[in-house]
Image (cartoon, rainbow, N blue to C red; front, side):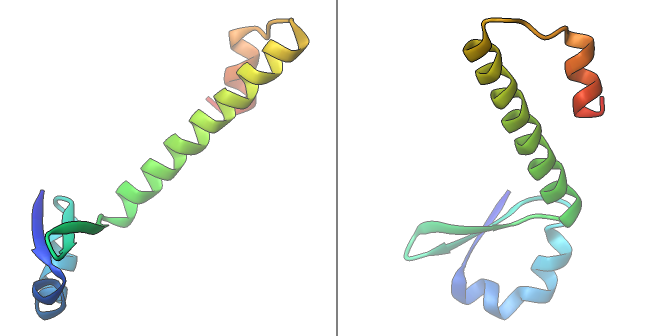
Length: 81
């Protein structure tokens, strides 16, 4: 993971867009991280993983409220696994 200031990133944007397909690129402002460039495929993977975690959380909450359990095979089927 490489880090660039906003000014550096502005000046090198085309090359940073190429670089972010290989590794994360952190953008800083006044020494603080303010953004991260990642490849679209990695972004989609991260969003999918977050959505899966949210789905699992909702299932767990539902189970806790109802007091019943859902078979693991049913959960996987509902999540498309």
